[in-house]
Length: 233
Image 1 (cartoon, rainbow, N blue to C red):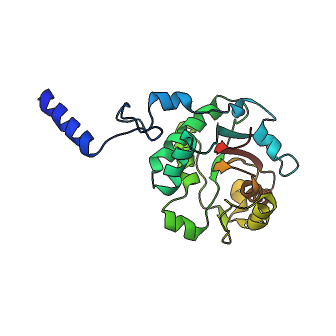
Image 2: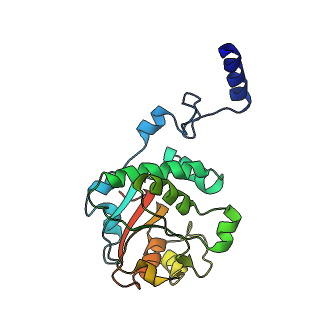
Image 3: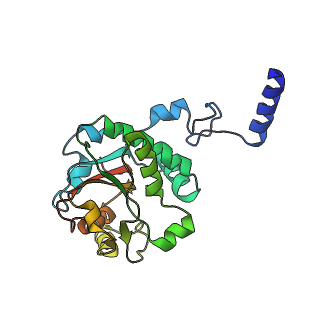
C-alpha cells in the first residue's frame, strides 16, 4: 500500500510539480511555498526593533506615526520581488498569507507595536479590486491577523476616486496623483484607536501618506505603518 501511495505521489508531482516560488527548486516540503535556502536568504530589515529606522525617517515631517516597519528590503529580480509578483499579478493569495504571518511574528517580537486595535489594509480603487479579485493588502492583513489575534477593519477606509499607477511617477507626481483620494466611512469606529496601516511595498510613501492624512481626521487616532518590503535602507 505504501508503495502504491509513493507511486501516486510521484505521478502527481510529475504533472503538478510543487516547486519553490523563489528559486524553482523542488526540494521543499509539501506545505511550504519556498525552500529552506530561500527562507534563509530572505532579506529581513529588523526595522521593527528600532526606533527612527529608515521607514520612520521617510515620514518625518509628513505624518505623525507611532512606529513604522517594512519586513524585507526590496530589490529587482530578488526573491521578495518574485513573491510580491505572485501575490499581486498571479492570483497567489497564499503568498500574502505567508508573508503577512512572517511580518506579524516580527511585530510581536517588538515592543513598539503593542496594543494595536485594528489592522487596516491600504484600500484599492473598487474597479481595480474587482479586476484583480482581491486586495493584496487585505490578504496580508488576514495572514497577520491569524498570528497577532488583531481584527482586520475592512471597508472603513476607502478610495473615493481612481488613481493612475504610481510605478513610473516621481515623488511629486506620486503625491499629486493620490492626494485627497481616501475617505473614512465611519470615523467613530476609529476614535482613540491604535491602528496599523498595512501595504505591500513602500517606495516614496506617497500613497500611505495620503491615506494617513485622511485617517488623521479621526479624533485621537494613533497610526502605525507596516509593509512587506521597501527600497529604503
